[in-house]
Structures are given as C-alpha cells and as structure tokens.
Image (cartoon, rainbow over all chains, first blue to last red; front, side):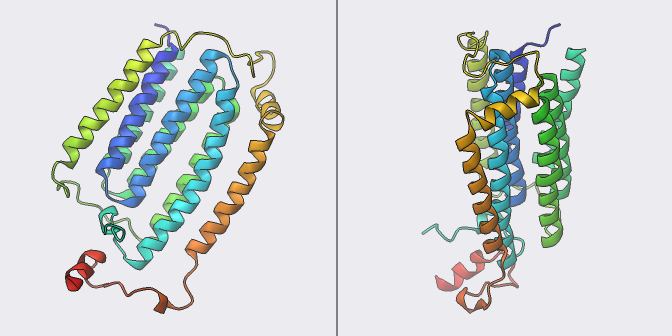
Length: 101
Length: 195
C-alpha cells in the first residue's frame, strides 16, 4: 500500500479535532494551552504535506514562522497563566470570569 | 517501509494527543505532548522537511514543553483534576458534536480535493531535489521572506518583554483587590459577598 498525501492530511485533521475537543472539554488552563499546541502542530503537518505535494517550499517557510509565533505565544501565555495562578491558586478557566459583566 | 513509518508515527501521534486530553495530571499531559511532537517530527522527516524536523524537536520538545513543565513545577498545579464530573451541563456532548463536525468537514474537503487542489506545481519556490533542504529554506527565508523574518525578531523581543512584565511581582499588593485565599476558587466566593 502506498502512503498518499491524503493520509497525512487526514491524520492532521484527526489531530486538530482532538486538540479542539480537548480545548473545549478541559478546564485546567495549562492543559488547554497544550491542546492549542496540538492544533498548531496539526496545521504544521498539513502545511508540510501540501509543501511536499505541490513541490513548493512556501509551506515549509510558513511552518518556520508558525514555530516562531508559537514560541512567542507560549512565553506570553504561560506568563499570563502564572500571573493568574499566583493571585488565585488552583484557578480553572471557569474562575477567570472578571469580564463576565 | 514508508507505510510502516507512517503507521507507527501516526499511532504515536494520536495516542499522545489523546493522552494530552484525557490525563488528569498535567505532568502526564505534558509528557504525552512530547510523544505527539516527536511523532510529528518523524513525519516531517518522511516528507523531506529535515530542517523543520530538527527545529520541531529542539524548539517544541526541548523548549516549549520544558517551559510547560517548569510552570507546573513552580506553581505546584500538578494535583490531579477530577475528570469524572462535568462542570457545565452538556459541555461534553456539545464538544463531541463540534469535534465530529470539524473532522467531517475537513476530511470531506481533503477527500474532495484529491489529487491536492489543482495539482499544479509550485512556481514561486519550487523544491530542488538536488539541493539540501536547509539551504533551500535558508535562501527562501533570507531573500523572499527577509522582511517577515525581521518582523519575527521584533515579535520575539516584544514577547520577552511582555513575559518579564507579566512575571514580575508587583511592588505593593495594595493596587490589586484582595483575593479570598481560604475559599480557594477566588471570584466565585467574592461574587456572593457583593451580591
């Protein structure tokens, strides 16, 4: 059996779905953040697959920039989570509701 | 051989991803995330994106997950979460429906566009098989995408400054309203008093 590009794309779709469901279901901010990373990686896999399928380096360049943005996002996001958890230890996503009105 | 690599890597990726979502302990989630990231790196190698595979292991496995583990360790939030109860009624069925809808739509789109899209080859940055992947990627980044590359350096500086500002302990706590510590869950307790 030959591994076609569609296999990689469907694996990316599965990974994205697992990440999205995890983000919706979990309440621990750290685990929610890890689920965001899963979704980013699913998209990276899709980009590399299209880069390989279409014989175009552009997809790999985009993945490079996604990695940089993901690193910056993790640094700032974890800073926010640290600030929240320092003020109210054991807070979950449900407790951060100051803007609820 | 390629089939074997794909199946093993896909199994590791999906098992790791499920592990991230269902682990009650955040440390186990972080370790499952490492498995997923390594599986993705293997698939990058299988698709001849060698530089990105190395960067994936170094940046994601080596830096980002370690950052997660440091935060877990420093804050001591590694207590297991009770996953058997559902805090919001109907949250999990709704998430399952949305997830299945996402999966169905994306898989449908991918299967409809097989062979991929128009099937036309790229002309902007065509991959040259005779040259190493890292040379081609470097040439593309430092010529066609040089401006975007410079902007990312500004982004990283801003992120570092933001992280330092966020992580700083305020000089006096008087500016911030007091949080009820004993009740544990913060705003929920405060709300009752105000109302």
